[in-house]
Amino acid sequence: MPRLQSPCLVFRSHRWFLGFLIDPIVVSPLAGYAGFTCDATVFPKEAEYDYIIVGGGTAGCPLAATLSESHRVLVLERGGAPGEFPSLAGQDGFLRTLVDTDARDSPAQPFTSDEGVPNARGRVLGGSSAINAGFYSRAHPSFFDDGGAGGTVAAWNMGLVNESYEWVERAVAFRPVLRSWQAAVRDGLLEAGVTPYNGFTVEHVVGTKIGAATFDSHGRRHSAADLLRFANPTNIKVAIRATVHRILLNPVLPGSLSLSLSLCGRYRCPSDLASMVLGRRYWFGSCDQPSSPPCPLLGSSGRWRAKDEVMAAGVVYRDGLGRHHRAKTRPGGEVILSAGALGSPQLLLLSGIGPRPYLSAWGIPVALHHPSVGRHMYDNPRNSISFIPAVPVDNSLIQVVGIPGADASFVEAASNIVPFHSPAPSVFLHQSASPFFVTVATLMEKVPGPASEGSLRLASLDARDNPLVRFNYFSRPEDLARCVAGVRRLGDVLYGRSMKEFRAGATGLRGGRAGRRDTRFVGPALPANMSDDAAVAAFCRRTVSTLWHYHGGCASGKVVDGDFRVMGAAALRVVDGSTFRVSPGTNPQATVMMMGRYVGLKMLQERRNRWPHA
Figure 1: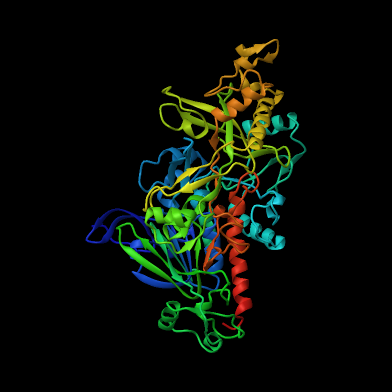
Figure 2: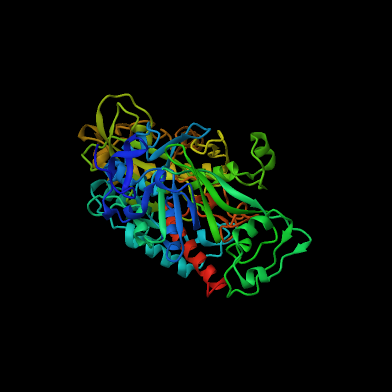
């Protein structure tokens, strides 16, 4: 039998023997988080923490690293560690990761919307930032407005927002090197009038730009998991293959009796008293003595909000062997959902927070009637054209983006070698059964916003199963109008001078110009008459796909407030893209990582302000 390794360096085992891990895969300590990342099977059956973060993904990792500065943090990640999956190491594994999803623990978990559009969600430490195309760009400025056009109702501190972006960028953002195809896309966008040229920048600015990449100069991927290297290792534990099944909720029942303020002003409440009082009809006022240790009955904010009906006290999770564990919050602690746009609303529903009639139909005890949980789901439609270039091109993921204006579709591009005898073409293009490998160049447009919204519902009572989701693509006419304009812009780029050498071979030239019929499309071709609105709109509907930027389900202003607290629930927040009302900028991962850092800093400051001597 192989010598057993330290359990907090073991990220995966191939076999089990008498309850022990054997044949382990050990991740190098250079990963930065190996020393405090353990398989969930080695965690105690019950333990207490200051903060319990459900989801070690794009928001959860920076949030955990920040909160661990001075508090005990537990991260519960349902997937494995990135080092277990070689395809995650570099950009050449991008397509393979998205199509190799047969295993129960694959880092990309596939799902298909009710409309039949294939999609995927991250199931690995680092979340979707560990499996995506690696483009890094900040949010559009109006995302931070707290009005109707903003992405949330939060009153963002822009100084702290920029500091948080910069903190993220020190670890995961790099300047890419443009080769022939991406350089031609840049030039083609400028020819098509997407001006000015802004060079390399992480800012969202109108025109054509080169964005940052999360792949470094050696082609190695960096994800939100890399931000765990900033954590305080003595204060943080990360459990992988830990699936959270429900949130532990206690009722808050206002009554006619008042609890003496000295309860929180003089001493910390014992846990048995907390349990006793929470079962009675007491109303808790604010604590007037913030210099004293806080009473857990008052939550992290130091006071009950008038509309709070329940209080989060921990979670129940299951390890890879099916054994149940309980993680509970310590006095002043919180449960924070960072499980993504599918996982966070799903877990709220499974825990009894959602529409009362819907939960009752599933037989789920209703803890808090919340009609908006699972509603206001969005996915930005992507429409693309793919063709076989006449000259060789390198593999490239998104590096250049065209931003025509505030409400116009974004234009991006990629180039990949795809095996036509496998499902790989379904990622960027429609299915083909040809049994050979070809290089395919892709131009794509993404509708901003979007305005069309859908909903999420449970498929089962098992948290491991994907929920069901309908996005209602193009149900709002403004989304379809933006797509029509975006597809026309793809034609302008494709048939511009910069694309001439890629578009067709010498035999395709007619009088010195390449004819449109000579472009060797793979999958649907552009409409023959691009001036026909109906034909282009039909193309949009027929070829709609995803760029994996879905969001919502715990929408800000509907489910969470401006501090990302679940309205009606104490000690419970949602910090991830499920709170967004619009997608931030061209690609959301930069803003989701920033959000984790930003909210963590705000929470630390809030706690210091409440109890400076605690």
